Length: 254
Ligand code: 13P
Figure 1 (cartoon, rainbow, N blue to C red):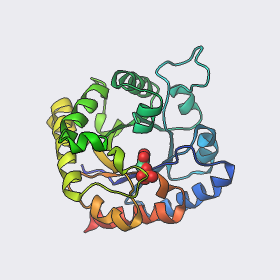
Figure 2 (figure 1 turned 120 degrees about the vertical axis):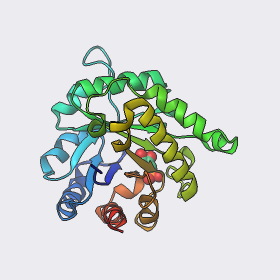
Figure 3 (figure 1 turned 90 degrees about the horizontal axis):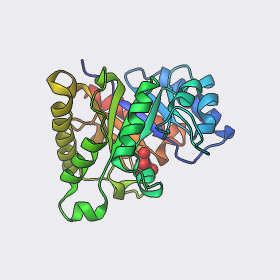
Figure 4 (figure 1 turned 135 degrees about the vertical axis):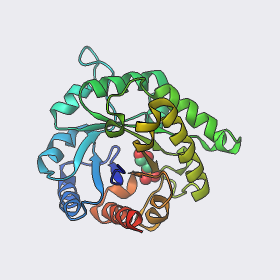
């Protein structure tokens, strides 16, 4: 069964308790747009407060450790996220791959830990501008994804989401061309069918991320194999974030 479009806000390192009113507004608006599944990943410090405010939207984290507990100063485990009310975790974001030198194997271990803790996962992949210019975007993303995905995911259509985020489109105002997005999503779909089979592979949602805003969301979300969006900057205000969610709802109806 086709799933609802999934619109996820990645607040990155933005937000103090002053942002709770924005989360509340997003939640109330999401209750009026049930055709779309809306979620936000605020900083760790806001997971529990947003969870307490939210009646409709899911709240999640932007990373987790691959161990359940231990002497890992400054880290947060998947079990802790679940305990705070988190329902999902974003893993392998390019900002973590870059600034924290996260490699595919580590991301795969984190994905296993998150799934064990009962969280859903959003696994990110994407190429740099240099890789795209060299004509290696598709092979790069497929290799990255293959190595980051755990082998066995029970109920993968429900618990796994893939997010394609070209690095050069993140926070730059540039979006990938519609043909390039469609081509990459079709390739990712093939990989998911190879890995998870004909029954499950077609139902795993693939999100696009990179400068998505209300003005471009309709055309991006109308593309085949685009099952939603992972939104950074435009998720920080209820107005722009829900503008994207509404465009997603319209795109599936069209
Ligand atoms: P922007 O929407 O700000 O480009 O960020 C995208 C992103 O990195 C979401 O994870």
